[in-house]
Length: 346
Ligand SMILES: [Zn+2]
Image (tube, rainbow, N blue to C red; front, side, top):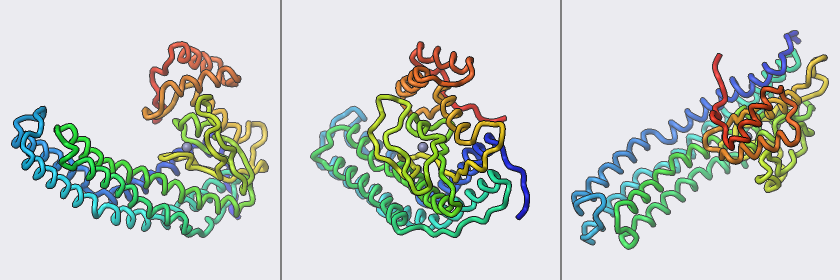
């Protein structure tokens, strides 16, 4: 075995949250390109042509559909276009995702071995893994997500349900929402693949497992950051820094905790801890508390939830440097975080 230097807590966290998560994101993007092609641009064209047809037939965007024959023709053309655009998407997305599952589990097994290399200072071989049948079934469900949007859009675009352009716009928008739905399904399934392979690798090491959240993860995932459980055990259900969202979920074996969750687990053995510094799981918990105190989060998360979480953190004792706690106190008093972006870069 080749001797290596053991990495420090920050380097270990950065390896998983930075480099390894980025590599997974790159894989997701590649799958999305294969699945979606130029679909977004084609929806753009459809929207433009439809508005032109409406204005030509009825005079303006605000005008009601006064001529039933013209309305029927316009809607029939739009419904046909939606069938053409979304019909092949289900099978194409299923194939793109299914083809990539083997790569996703192999990537995750390699990444986990690299983490254990760094945590122990010894070389480790990646475990051999193949995508499970459950995983492949969940990948195939991407076609249902597309079919659901298509069917709802087609129902909205029946002549009996359309009087104004806004209704057409809503119908086309519903069809087009298949694009973000496909992206989310890809992210979630790749996340499941990563965690399935990681679980196999953790079982192989015979160690426990620890939860690693992103630095701008939601108030739920940050409540799991740094938690350690036995390899075959579940993480407790219902944890959340926001008291209003507590207790509503079941125990889970690992991430993803929700759609678009990029949390990870890794093996952890107390014997790997360096002397004289806080343990890796403790450092993850502290960083999660810092993220709550600073309000670091995605714009999609509720600002009110972040403030409730920060208040809860201060109430229970943040254990952070005074300046960070003061920052959180001011934000809670103001009722908002002015800037929620996690600072990246050099
Ligand atoms: Zn998460």
